[in-house]
Amino acid sequence: MHCQPERKIPVYIWLKNKQPCLLCDEPSDSAMALCTPCLHDLPWLGAQCPVCALPLPVAGSTCGQCLQRPPAFTKVIAPWRYDFPIDSLVSRFKHHEKWPFGRLMAELLGQFLHYRFDEGLPRPDCLVPVPLSRRRLRQRGFNQAGMLAHWLGRQLQLPVEPQWVRRTQDTPAQQGLGARARQGNLRRAFTLASDAQVRGRHLALVDDVLTTGATAQALARLLLAAGARQVDVYCLARTPRPKAPD
Image 1: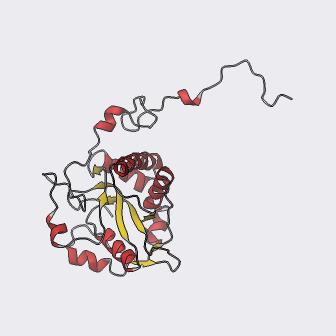
Image 2: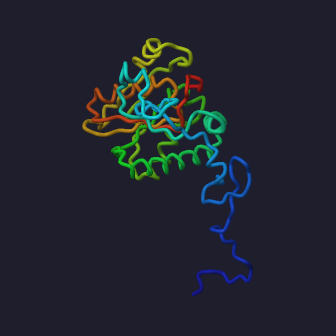
Image 3: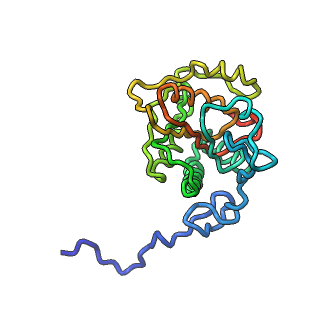
């Protein structure tokens, strides 16, 4: 019995397919939809605060805010500054449903985290995406943090727990607000699911961009109060100042 049809025509080999770079549209010279020159030109985050990843002019120093008021989370891991073209990719993924851009950035973030794990960064027990409120989820149709966490979880072989934290209140944009006002907005914005098994576990929050850090701070406090051992933050980019949209 012949299971395959006999055809005397060329067979298309997918492994030899050259996909275009998503940034410059030239043929990619790697397995990703990004060519090497565009990869090198991304706004890689250099000197930064070792706690909140705020871009700093000099490496090896901690920012004043983390020195004066250490955050509840232990460390922020972000490969890029929120600058061109990352800001454009995030916006198109987040607001225009251009999911290939999100998938590409998640793949690069996963590679970056693998590198950091090899350097000694402790691996978390699981990933927890930052939730959206029901109203915003209905408007957008998807949670970008949840999609990023899903892609990262498969790449890093880590479980993802999207239902552990829920956003019960939609808060106004944090841009331009002082620290006290930001904390007030988020004081009762999140709740922990009754079946969330966080006690004694090392968790990593996943989001697209870290701006003020108020959302990560509120969630880290909630998880630590429930018994989590450590909370880190994994995101695509860090802003030098509050300019990214919520």
